[in-house]
Length: 131
Image (cartoon, one colour):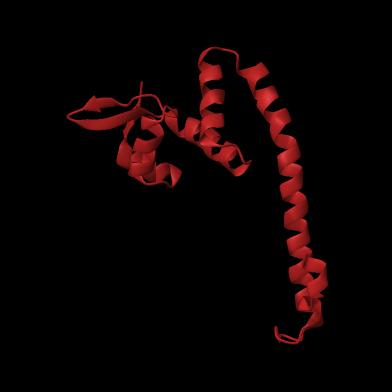
């Protein structure tokens, strides 16, 4: 089994070694083997980190990701992943809608071209609407 040191793994996945140690401490990564006092990981650990980062970008918490990885170890991953994903989809849909609204607001501001935030009609609010 080919192994890689923590520094090399960190560079390979674009993270700091301290983040990898943290992931290990909370159970996202299995405990590293020690060689001369230094952590070494199987090369396949980079793939696990890629899964963790994808899940984070999708909005899963570290606790949810740990549940998913624990289910993988127990071979219950398919059912567990489906449950987590079905719960996450509405949250992602809301995020997409909010992000699209923000994108449209920025585009409207660019189209306005007034570039004066004090007098821009797009930013004018009726204070009675805030209550």
